[in-house]
Amino acid sequence: AQSVTQPDIHITVSEGASLELRCNYSYGATPYLFWYVQSPGQGLQLLLKYFSGDTLVQGIKGFEAEFKRSQSSFNLRKPSVHWSDAAEYFCAVSASGGYNKLIFGAGTRLAVHP
Amino acid sequence: DGGITQSPKYLFRKEGQNVTLSCEQNLNHDAMYWYRQDPGQGLRLIYYSQIVNDFQKGDIAEGYSVSREKKESFPLTVTSAQKNPTAFYLCASNQDPRHGYTFGSGTRLTVV
Image (cartoon, rainbow over all chains, first blue to last red; front, side, top):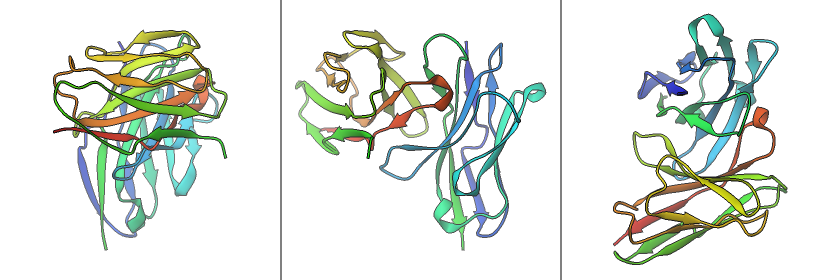
């Protein structure tokens, strides 16, 4: 069965510092991979996605992620964090065939210190 | 602009009552989904529908019911059989699996 692990429940960084949020997945073939962001009391917004091609993908708000098949990882990065990036981040995976059910990780809550 | 509308934003229910959460989309998406979100547990799939008049149970369907009579609408009923219904409920839709889901802004249900 597919699964997604986000090892870090909470992360705190200083404004202007770099950020890396970890995501590992379990799936037999190449999945579709996604990162979403959620502000408190809101829905989820898609940051970026990977389904084929270049393994380094660029997203909105200055985020990027790299798909590493050998490590079954899809880590999210940002070179310089802004206070407005404080939110919860979810990694998700879906099968590349069949129906489109997304499996979500438990999320990482990001706090940004001024 | 196209999107997903969930209503109401906040909902209070007395124990033993059924309540229906609304989800409407104008994206012309075939597939729609209901997720439940609890702190520290991420999102768990309740029901999904890939086409009108068809839907399947997700991982935590007990105590919930849905209908899909129109492409645009996928209402979720939380029945009295749901033992712990207080949660944040998210509706989503998609058309192409490569592009992920579009989410609504959620409904927070509280049992009082």
